[in-house]
Length: 151
Image (cartoon, rainbow, N blue to C red; front, side, top):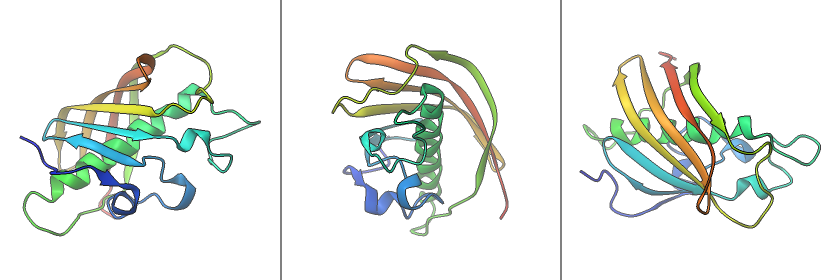
């Protein structure tokens, strides 16, 4: 079952997650249902991207794109019972089965496509599988577990 009726743009995304300014990395949610979310971004091309070091963004930092997609998904799921978004602070507690296929995020004009799939979730955290692609090329994949803080 779809939980969004149209793509969500960055202005609305900023209301769903605790990240702000240049650290809000996801630019658009393309689709989402109760189990998964697909998003896109070109923030990896920005010179002001806070993950950039010496002009490049190491592929391991793509985990943050996936984690933000997970935060968006959790916020969207919180809307199922009311119109009020519940934004919770989350902390990555586990990375598993991380596979990288390049060393740095590409600097081409291509979108990053982030896909997440919920494995399990509760009031205190979530586990997801994720993939970050560029066009048809898989860049990084793995599993992330997030602990949700009460603050």
